[in-house]
Length: 222
Ligand code: C5P
Image (cartoon, rainbow, N blue to C red; front, side, top):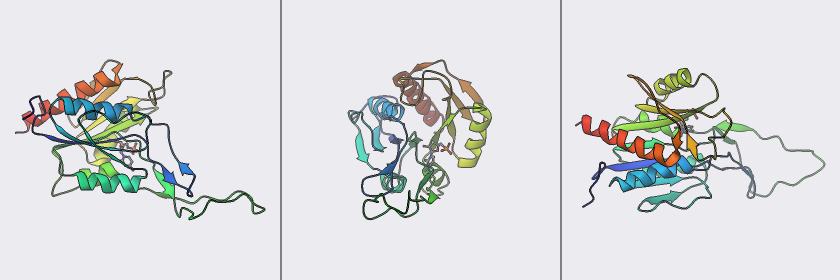
């Protein structure tokens, strides 16, 4: 049996970008590295949890001691998340594409006399909101992330309510140094009770501190 602050707990984490197909060779993507989500999965495993990590396409290795499900698109990520439930804690650190191409082409699109193709975008499912709004089988603790470039705390509070989650980990991604793809992170924990702003730390240290916070909240909820 495992020991540690999350022993006996099930933790689900999403991480990385999603890739939305345009045709068999092209995708819509974003610059998420997966570092923060992967670090949280690794830290939860070290704390004794049974961890499932649902990861979009990333260039970093699978964390040790974690079950990793590799997906590409937002719709695949949602299916993998639903298949991985139930969980005590669900952490949505992935940078899910807001939109996908309405109909991805079955064959590679060709340059031609018709000029460039027009891509029609449609909204992707909101994975965090879908899980947070579940009745039966909702995780005890549903955690979202907010990468904001302005009005960080106001936007995070609004997001907390809109998504129906218990905690938003907000970070300001506007400043130089680049959180997106970078190694450190300055986060604010936003809950219905208020805001807790943490000092700048490595993404690994943020992960360790978040896991300790989750363990404390789960302990308090029993
Ligand atoms: O609305 P916004 O994309 O800013 O919200 C960010 C939070 O929502 C992150 O926790 C992200 O993982 C989650 N999210 C999601 N599915 C989406 C969009 C965002 O799970 N389609």
